[in-house]
Length: 105
Image (cartoon, rainbow, N blue to C red; front, side, top):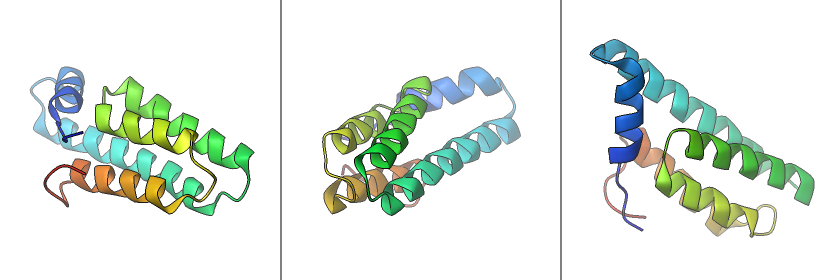
C-alpha cells in the first residue's frame, strides 16, 4: 500500500483551521501517541499486551484517518507478539508521518 498523507493531513487541517502552529502541534501529538504504542508493542511479550497496544494504535489511526497506520496496526493484531515484520512496518509508516522517510512501505 502506498503512503498517502491526504486523509491524515485533511483531518489535521480540519481540526487546526488556518493555524499552521496548531497543525504542526497536532501532527506532533499524533506521532508521539503512535510512537508510545509502538514502544509498547516492542516491549510486549504476551498476547494480551501486544493486542492492547495494537488496538490502541488501530484506534488512533482510525480516529485520524491514517489508512497506512490502520493497515499496519491490523497486521500487528494478526501477528505474534514481538513480530519484527509488524514492528518494522509500523516504524516505516510513522517515519513517513513524522517526515523522516519517503515512499511506500
